[in-house]
Image (cartoon, rainbow, N blue to C red):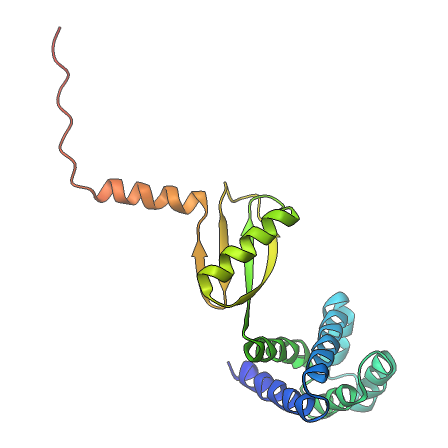
Length: 193
């Protein structure tokens, strides 16, 4: 929880910096830069380990970060990242990026949702699901689709900490529980012939 709070504070600072230095365009540009940084950290576990290990000096981290990102991200973002590393919060860079994106989404009135299906959706199904979720939630939705062959059918939607489980397995389980809980009359014995 503490790491999440610290990450959110850094993300709020970056958002304020973007708003003061270019408005909506900078907000979007900084968001794309933070996605690049998160991608760099997640792409190769050695990069993350390099940023987190105590064996690597602060100057080595800053030099490596500058070499990797100069020209790829706005200068203000690079300076922000160097401050984060200097404050020994380099391990939180990915979380800061996620928190930043959440703040931007909140500011833009949109919600990110994770949709899990039993099969890969085509573009038409993705659009249909997105429209349905937007109608149900009353806000713009940015869905991320994943496939879980363990699902028999239907879908599971995650919005933050909330889970909307419309999978066939869950529906069957609910039906079974309802039938077990129902006060049904006993079956009559078959008539003798």
